[in-house]
Image (cartoon, rainbow, N blue to C red; front, side, top):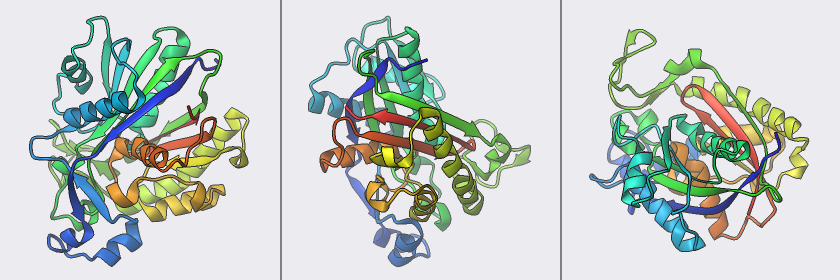
Length: 326
């Protein structure tokens, strides 16, 4: 079904506190040079002690309203993408609804697809609007990953930072902005990247790390460089497009080496690839909207540009979308 929706506004928020590689040198056995060479990260943002995914998402929406001049009073649905919600229930989407004191006939839902979450939120919003279920949807990607980061594990603590992004997706049958989507999963490998919750076992075995994020870096890397290039090609094929038609490739900002390998396999140059990795680290569902926000601030993205967004990570799962910039 041809899309009847497009993105109409963007906002973002990152906490004030920075954690640099030099700060990490004092916490674990590592060096700035080692981190930069292997990940491309120089800094990451750390949420305040009493600041969580909901509060950061709220501030990202405030930024969207302030910079775009648009209202969210008439949204039909709020989709809040996060794997680090404040609570098991109520949802962050419901919390956002309450913080803005919105009207009662609005749908609220949290979506957990980890690092592919924001793309899934966009695709879901497009599907709801195109099907006629809604006319205007607020999509938020927000993570408080540092709250579940083990700062004794040097393989993971160097990666993660906190942050949030938000977009409005609205009905527009005359000038739709969604040209295609693609998704997939390898659920049998879910134990290669996990963070426990009420169940302290993973794949039936007692988890080695409780309530903190852990990943098998090599397994996740191999999953990404095997799956994402093929997924992007399928996304382009389904959309009737080629790499040359895309102005910007916006992958999940997981790791610089990973992104470089994926981009090279696809033929995207570094100049055509947008990330939020260097200043903000891996903020899971926050990385793609933060990359868009940075590029917009730098006037890189132009109206009508075609962007290939691709998220991948915990699940293990992956999701892509091609959107026309507003």
